[in-house]
Image (spheres, rainbow, N blue to C red):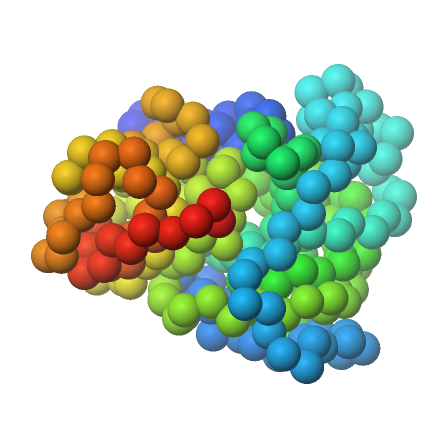
Length: 255
């Protein structure tokens, strides 16, 4: 029990300290491709995942979560433009929904707002650019005790990622860390699931966070050739025994 409590606290702290499917099962997180009612769906999905750079949004995020200014915003409606991500929280047994972006092009600092969609199945695919409008609400069920409720979502640019159960390539750095922590502490929940992960080759059996040394590392076993150390890659494979059984480790430009 103590280990479970410690793991849950670590999960919350990692998300809180970042500089930064409609069902409660982790499988098929990229399946929904429709837009919410009233959305203006793009006629053709984008070839690359759109991301938002917004320094003022990052400052606001810092003020709310670190500078004791949450009371100034709780109960107020706001619109957040950013990238859509789904994260399966194995500690609570539920899928969480986020709109996120980076402070600037260095991708050194990110921000992510959790929200409660009215109809999760109507959301577009992970990685799509959306505008989320809702009311900031205190709730112990939120991972950081604050999330947006009474939400409407407008699709701005659709994205069509490769289908898999857990797609970390459509998450910002913080959400990617949190998802990996869930998988490492709850390996049986994710056993046999397909996934995609973006990072840097640390050695032939380890992938590392793409922008920071020591932020996270994840072991993998590859059946295909692994690119040179330092290469940015998208790793595709299956989660098994806390290791990624990789069938593809493909070099990719900045993602």
